Image 1 (cartoon, rainbow, N blue to C red):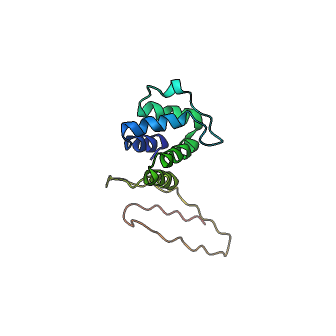
Image 2 (image 1 turned 120 degrees about the horizontal axis):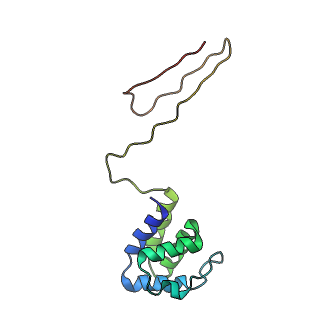
Image 3 (image 1 turned 60 degrees about the horizontal axis):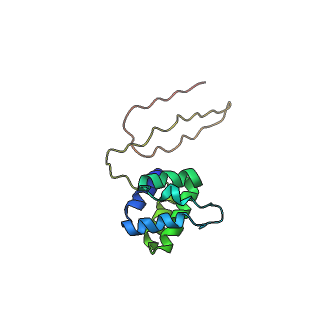
Length: 136
């Protein structure tokens, strides 16, 4: 899941009063590496506008970190942990059963005269088309 999607999903879990608290905290120096966002940029900002402003101001990595810190401050410890875990994992489990992994890049194996190549083990599906080229 992309960071903006992850952040918007997280902010949508907040009730309106807690979302307002999160925006208030964004106007403060929460992390040393993150400057506050001006209050005028957040006063009327929606959740999506807030996410955009956070990523613009902090970058994706710091936006996740500062969101997690603020969530802890306003009592959303479980949500903060879930955000960090989902971000660390890089993606969330797919709800689609039709997800297909991208094809693997073709492998090249070479041996010098008299050498032996031990073929790699095939994992996953073994059906389909296989192209094998042997050069002498």
